[in-house]
Image (cartoon, rainbow, N blue to C red; front, side, top):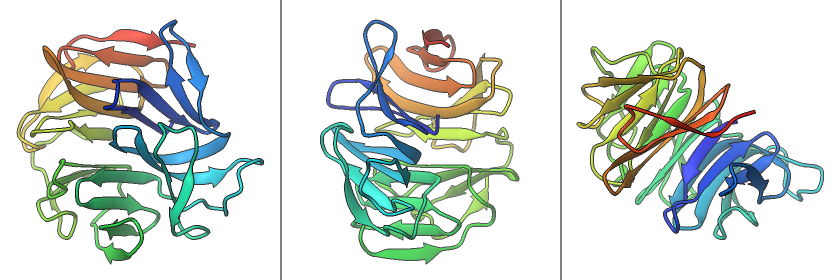
Length: 242
């Protein structure tokens, strides 16, 4: 699995995989909702509005790679936006002011059509941005990077854990990340300082954070299960297991 996201339209949970986009069902399963395609990058842009990138399946009429593609019906159908045949974004994040993606270069766009190339000190494994797009976090093999100008310049976050995946809540300054061992970390100041949470014991593949009544909702996809916390990452329940 390469991505996980919560649809703000109804709180549904979606998993972006090598075989397409799946929606978790009430019965503890997952149903394929998209055509079969390899979704390497995935981001929720709004209610029912998703962005993705990757490789087309045999029955998907899109170039290889797919570039930036878009769904406005919660992943049922997809349309090309830009960079078809050019970009396979392995890291992708969106905000109210645009899109930031990494396809070997860090690229930024205000409308998903016109892109500018930016510099970043190390290759990002995952990217996440605040809702206004100004603050950005990038997980890298050298440590956590932070930008306060929408990805134009970067600095290392001193004292931050070595995170593999990270995600920003849909509002405010709450962030959650998971290190390679499966330990969950949270930040309430936009990634400057971090607090240890649950130890999940499996390597993470993706994380999603959203605001929920009573506490922060943190969903983590590991190599062993899909797990969710309703108390800000302190305790988790399994939603989906092999």
